[in-house]
Amino acid sequence: MRGLALALALALVLAHAGARRAGLQRRALLSAVRNAALWPAAASLLRLQPARANGLVMFPPESLHNRYFLLRAGETAAEASGSIVSNPIATLGPATYLTERGVGQVEAAARALDAAGLEGGTGCWVYYNKASSSQQTALVLQRALGVSTSNMVPDFAWLDPRGVGALEESSLSTLDQLHARDTNDALYRPPLGDDGTPSESLGDLFVRVRNVISILETSYQDVDVVLVSPSSDVLSVLLAAANGKDLRQHAEYALGPAQFAILDLVPRYAAAPEQGLGAAAEPATTAASEPAAAIAAVRADDRADVSSSY
Image 1 (spheres, rainbow, N blue to C red):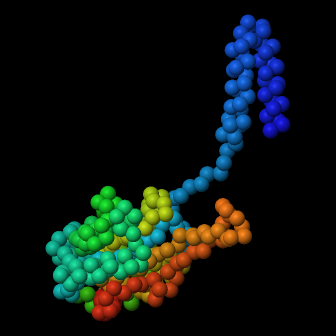
Image 2 (cartoon, helix red, strand yellow; image 1 turned 180 degrees about the vertical axis):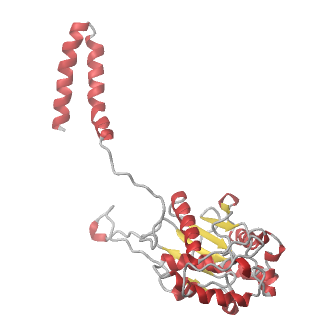
Image 3 (cartoon, one colour; image 1 turned 135 degrees about the vertical axis):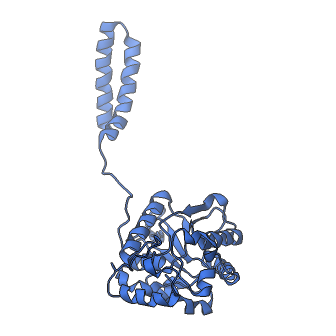
């Protein structure tokens, strides 16, 4: 304050002398007062501050801005018949429509999500994959939880089911062989087929889920986000990476149809009484660090379906 007063006084003296020479005493005085008042603010703007960028999220993250509910879509017609459908075009067709049982699974999941504290209406965002099963799962959630249409956001790539290459349209039981290879090599890709179905490793899935979390973390702040994917592998890789586990152990986080897991790494700040108003205690972070705590089984009989997920 003393420095500001001295600067103001000096500016007034100099402006007065200059104004007398120019014959504009009153105008110069007013200009000097204005410049002296604005100088501290201008000076603070000139002091460069370190950049704070929210870009690519590094895994495992110490904290996240949002809370995530990772939901696998309900049972599809293809799953009910025991076949694999992962081709991005084929997942748009009737093979991945929800069965009647699948719809019931999602309705049960909606009730479980509500019980877990997910807020409907405009209080959450539903980010769902373009596959028919994910779209229908998202619509069931929207009706059950009253989610605003403006909060329903389609995803066109990141949450696609894992591409299984030449294993496309084969029996779900063949996934056991794929998962066995996963436990030895996180970069293993199934052989390519001739129908254009992608062939993806666990590492490929990690790149995808890291991208989607980075996008959401830079798009939203302090909200609940439901991620709907038709693929257990996509979601289990995300959970394993978020918990700092080797990707080859992602099967520990496998999800059956319409099962969900909660990823909560949002810091919680609680003011201690003795610290007074405005003071904050250390952040208390809650996270789904153990598979048993992370996975919410909606229907007990769905656990049998987890081994046949992709």
